[in-house]
Length: 71
Image (tube, rainbow, N blue to C red; front, side, top):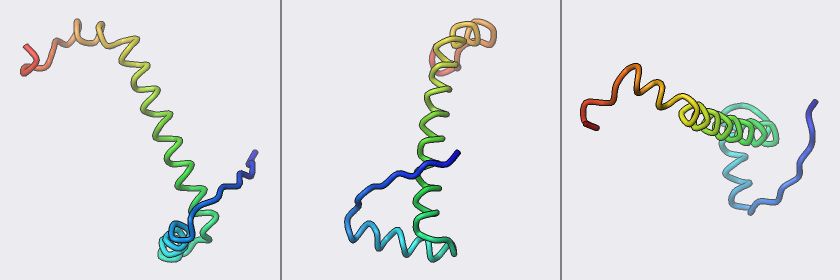
């Protein structure tokens, strides 16, 4: 389910958004949504990676060893 969010940005930022969106042949609103979605996806990935390392990092290092330069 999609939800609407309203934000205010400077005129300069909106003009830049319109230029990039036009280069990609998409409406500025759709481009802004895809940029926001990509940023949030990246943040969720990094959070998940940190969680994985916290949970499994020691076992991984024990099984496969440490990097040669960390010795």
